[in-house]
Image 1 (cartoon, rainbow, N blue to C red):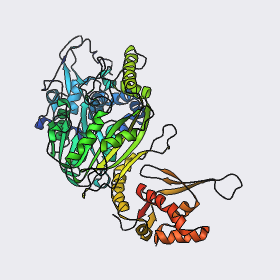
Image 2: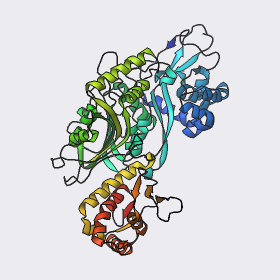
Image 3: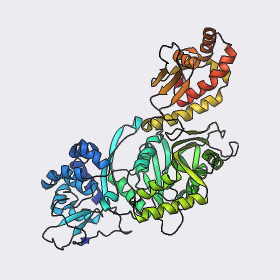
Image 4: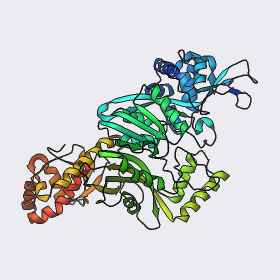
Length: 550
């Protein structure tokens, strides 16, 4: 912060009028001026990285802004637009009004004030200088949408804890965080007519959906969130999103969609006095009931062939398996309106870890009296339901076109405890999940005899790992490794490794099995019975691809 920047206690700031209170305005003309100014300033992710430098950018990622502020100070002193905008709206620090006016020539200071972006100094101990204090976080965001290509937006949200220096307000509107990035990375990008973003927050998922949907409906229970989301859509020139207020599926009663995405407020929060209920993460229900409600609700709002994708938590009660409860939310496969499901648990936390994570997320610092009080409240809540662990993961559901459920897959792909440890490969998961849904239909349609007639090819990202005892000719361990998808590492034996090595698109599955049986001097039928279930798994997870199957 510059040496002559005002302290909040010594200067009164003019608050920009807005309705509802304390939220950005949606004046179309002023937002267009802001967009022109951001473009002229070159306010991009790459430009900010260059401005900060590698070390300062890394410190900022860790929540430390001093190095970044120091890197930007010379540019701020010269009224360079990029440095001024970065200091105000990314670092959340006050800047001189004249400097901000130089950075926003089309919008102007009064325009920034009218939109609710800044508060202005009206005097005080340092009345000889006018300062602009940021009221929002506004930063560039880059993305890559597979075949749709890469691009960038600007995303506006509430100031975070780093800028505020205090616990967040309960109606805080979150910007783009880790969960947002995860959901956008797993989103299936097939072209659709209508999409629903349930609980849109700042609107980031609606913006992503708008790139491959003719129209998008974005809902939220928070008026403030909807205002930020509408502001962001206008700022980025996206006009195919309709914003509606309401809880869960109430705003879209009687409507159906080709795609439903949601980063629901799934965080499990104690329902006791004194525990903050943050709108962006707390759905107002007990335990993991919000995830159950979303999972059960999507079936009424998906068109045939439609897909729903969302993030969620699920509780482990006592010694029980969480997926037993998740299965019950889906209902029986034979029920009318049953859904295909692929549910992946990516992280598992014990009760104290979970409590600490979300108490800290709200801005309460470890070691404080409030932190211990809130931890007690969380652990009391978990103890009342005998919750020992909480899983976090991805839910992908599909309404079958013909009504026949062909996929019910529940798996843990985590790095916790005794569970399989795999590298994270979130970047390409949207296409990977879409492929899995298509291949699951094909696998369900072919019996083993028909599979024997199929021709397979090993995916180019598959490698083989072998371990030997020193001096031994035979490996003690074989594994197949996947470079994309979920980065799986699957144990293999000599027969399976040889089978995969022979899948070059020339010979059918049955012919390869027969040749291996002769080579290994085993019965072909027995070898087929052993290999084919594992081959089906390798096909589903993307290590083997059937030729001619789209």
